[in-house]
Amino acid sequence: MKTTLKKLSCFLLALVMVMSIATTAFAKTAKTPVILVHGLGANPVYENVGTDSQAEIQNLGLGNIASTIFQNKAVVNEVVKMLDSQRKPNRKKLINGLAKVVTKDNVINCTKNGNVKKGQGVINYWTTPLSKHKSYWQNADVAESAIARQLCKTYGAKNVYCFNYDWRQDVCLTAKQLNQYIKLIKKQTGAKKVSVIGCSLGGAVLSAYIDAYAKQKDLKTAVFVNPAIGGVDVARAYALDLKISKKSVIAYLKCMETAFNGGELQSLFRAIGVVGDVRVGYLANNLSKFVNNKTTVKQIYMQVLKPWIGNIPSLWECIPYDSFNAATNKLSKMGFLDKKSGVYKKIKKYHGVQGRFNKNIKKIKKSGVQVAIFASYGTMGIPITSKVNNQTDALIDTKYASAGATVAKYGKKLKAKGKYVSGDKVINAKTCALPDNTWFLNGIQHMRFYYGSDATKLVANIACGKVKANVKAVKKKYKKGQFLKEVNRKLVNVK
Image (tube, one colour):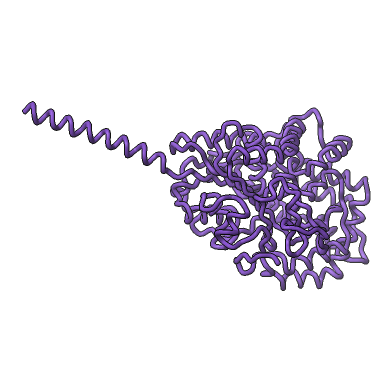
């Protein structure tokens, strides 16, 4: 009996030892978790969270505002006048009407100190992998959720996570929350590092995370997709850089005929363009008069924009680095921004993060982090500022998203030569922070990454470690260069 017990004890001890060795071996080969960080408006935010009256807040309130505008006869009447050369709109009535629209049931704005209002936030803060949240990505076709779907197919949904946050809040606060999230995922999985993909505003969040927490060495891979790391020139409107003309509006519509979604909506934009030669032209002329009138501009900013979105830090943090001082000084003088407020303190801090991005990204690459940046081009800027002729992805300027590329104006070419110059002479990547780790995608508008497309697969393959995050490695494995054009969801080299 004793002999039997002794043999059984030895067997159990040996089994425990084998299990321990197997567990250790498994932990060493476990996959690195991949975390997707979405952009502005890609995740719903709610008011009265956790109560019976919980309701989703419209992205920037546009849905509610649009419907309310059409119900406001005074506003509609003045807008109709702007489409007619024989009628003169009443600016005071229009502005007062708009002010009533944005303040009615408006819940999107933050407090005067730039904090999300009490009772508001996200409800889908998932600390479990996307294998537990299939409804988010299973049928996703485009944008962040489609990238998530591609990651799940490439890497397994149990290894992919989505960091959801209230995109209105200060980017540096979100970066702090991302750090806490990464710590939690590491603890849950036993992983030593994680890979993070920052999309659009999520790229700014990833930038702020790197600025504050890079020394923790928790990153294996950092991928930036159409990132807002350097700002957006349309946000120069904060610096009162307002310029609208019939010529730029018509040119923009023509650009969008072939640019947006690869020309899928060409007939729609062409129809608008035909009308635009007359009606939209009248509208552009009237808007031009508006933005050239200092009194009218001040009324719009103070009565419409300030109560609607004036305290949302993330929007302020999209101001380009070199426009920050002009923007904050001019709007402070107007009374729109209080430099003693929490809003200013927050955006000033992030302004410093913007200024350190190039240095930070070079430093983490040198430490061994795989870094990739994807910037799109091929679309002119939104025609409301002087920067309408910038190359953009339909929202973010290519020079900012790429961390410093030299970019030709829309419709123009560069005279530069060399391996870092695109075949169409539009981009010179040599001036980027990381010229060997930055890709340029012609024809892919802001976050229009489709599931199953070559572009989305490339992002997923780099994030999941299927290929190293440098131009040379990708070219060797996939025959895809640094400058790529999307044609029917396929990537071809720009020649």
